[in-house]
Image (cartoon, rainbow, N blue to C red; front, side, top):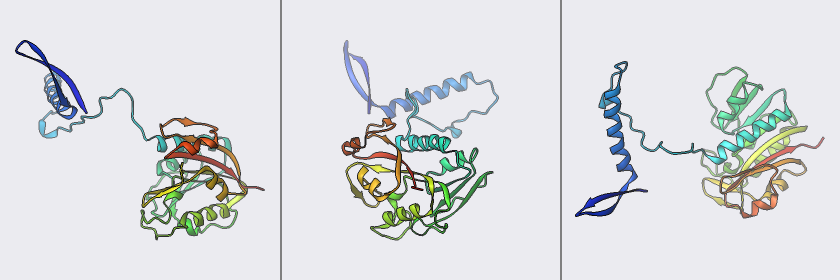
Length: 250
């Protein structure tokens, strides 16, 4: 990335393209000196304490589209479901810690999180061998997780059917009438070893049959969040984020 600037040489404007990093570094030095001159003396200001942040002067706040939209989607669904307790299996940790302020939450991961909060319990679980009783959980989430199972990325054993075994476990432990919030990459089916799998819409609904799909939302390749998305739109995605709210038949 470059910033355009002009200098005058022999009476002519000469276009020079400076790398942004160099320009930002020069600006930083100027601002450091100016700030030090303006200082009221409350804090010592020394170059040895410098901590240059050269990439934050932008017009909008950047964010990970998948990992911002899907927990926001799930939190809104939980507001509708209003469970007495929620159980999350290996989703992004911040989701469980935040919703525990309003809903008693149990969080489980292959690598348990050592966190102490009110209304929050953390423990270890292997998605391929959950220790919960059959049909014992009213409200369950597993988001951006299944696609990794069996690929060895997180220290788990290699297993081409690890995702399918884990889905069967989620189906087993959910109560009749209970809700499952499930999120995974969607688009053209493929494995990008050892990062993740990408599923078609039809694969996911088939794997969770006979569960009823209550809601499907989508984060598209261009980063748009589409509520009540058309399942056909998944076919045009390379790496979308599919958000599925399933209900287990009574």
